[in-house]
Each structure stands twice: as structure tokens, then as C-alpha cells.
Length: 113
Image (tube, rainbow, N blue to C red; front, top):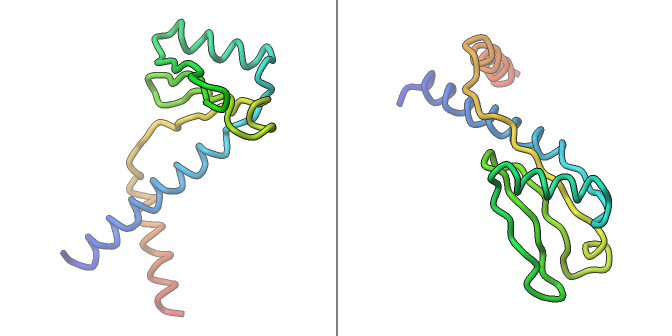
């Protein structure tokens, strides 16, 4: 593999990682019996999401949409028993040529320092 190809592959993986971190920042915590939680669960189920029921005193329950987003509620601690966490998934995409060129330029400048 040439240095240019290695750099391009590294940049692509870095950008995918940035998207993953950005998408996780869009998650929010809501109260388990709130309207938002009930709406998220019913919307997920109505749109063909896969729901999973509570199976015990400290278990979780929720629903995952076909795009990977969803909601999970419950858990073992007092805080978790009273809350739900929603999570979003950003649509995956490959970087543009400009993004790759900019990242390569930044890496070259970093190596020169």
C-alpha cells in the first residue's frame, strides 16, 4: 500500500469515527413515564421497529428502529429505573474529495512540525 492510499484510508476511518461521536451526542435522557418516552416507544413499534420487553426487576426494555436509532429504558440503578435514553444514528457516507484533500494537507503539515 502506498503512503497516499494509507493516508486516504486513515482519513476515511477518522471521518467515520467523527460521525459516530457526533451521532451519539444527539442522544437524550427522558423520564420513563413521560409523553416523550411513550411517543418514542409507540412510534418505533408502529414503524416496524423491534421492541424488547422488560424481563425482570432490573432488566431494560425499549425499541430499535430499522435505521439503528431507538430508545432503551430501565436498568439496575434507581436512576436507570426512572429514565430512558434515546439514541440516533447518522446516515453513513464517504468523505468528499475536498474533505480527504483537506485532511491529507493537515496530516502533512503535522508531520512537518
